[in-house]
Each structure stands twice: as C-alpha cells, then as structure tokens.
Image (cartoon, rainbow, N blue to C red; front, side, top):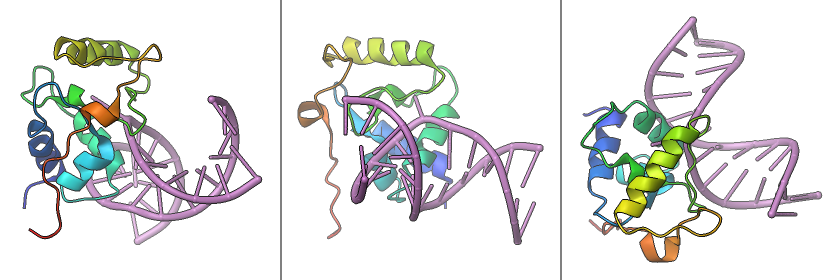
Length: 108
DNA sequence: GCAGTGACTAGTA
DNA sequence: ATACTAGCCACTG
C-alpha cells in the first residue's frame, strides 16, 4: 500500500494539461475523500522540479490557496496561465470550465 | 498516546 | 460577503 503522498502524486499526475482539480477531488482520487488537507500536505511536501503538476490543484472556490507562500501562488498562477487557464479579475478559475473529473464513479 | 498544525471543505450566523 | 465552528486525515514534537 503506497503512502498518501504517493497516491496524491499519482492522482495529480492524472490531471491533463490545461485542466485543474480541487483538493477534495484529488483526495477522492487518492482514495481518501475528505482528506483534502492531506492533499495540501502532500503537495507541500513535493520537491522542486517534481513531475507532479501540483499547480493544477486549487481549492473549491477556484482560487490558489497557498497560505504563507504567495510567491509560490504567483508561480502557480503563471504555470496555469501558461497552460491556457484563464483567471478572473479576482484571480479565480472558472471551475465549471476547467474542473476535471477522471471518471470517478463508485461502480467500478 | 496526546496535543498542535495544515497548499481544505461544508455549514451556520 | 465575512467570520466562526466542526470534520476530516496525516505529520510532527
């Protein structure tokens, strides 16, 4: 059984280019619905230059949630914009357009 | 084991 | 819309 860190990493890697996902959604993908906080912990624990597209993970409000890491938040925003993600004047993402659901169903 | 903390989320006022 | 509260799970001291 891989660690949460590994599961989160794998889940985030499934987010395609130009799409974003919420912490809760990633937690669900990782097999721990409700463990959105742990997703943040796992992403914060990611190394620099990782293969994990951590920047495609935002909160349920469509905002970049990085607390105490505004520099990283700006970096994430730039990365997303680089992928074609558009931000509101409030620096929010239109989740209705960008939120990505990788066939998360309970019947499987 | 207990208490504190955290890149979260949903509910209530 | 903002502020406060409760729940969540894993790491750290």
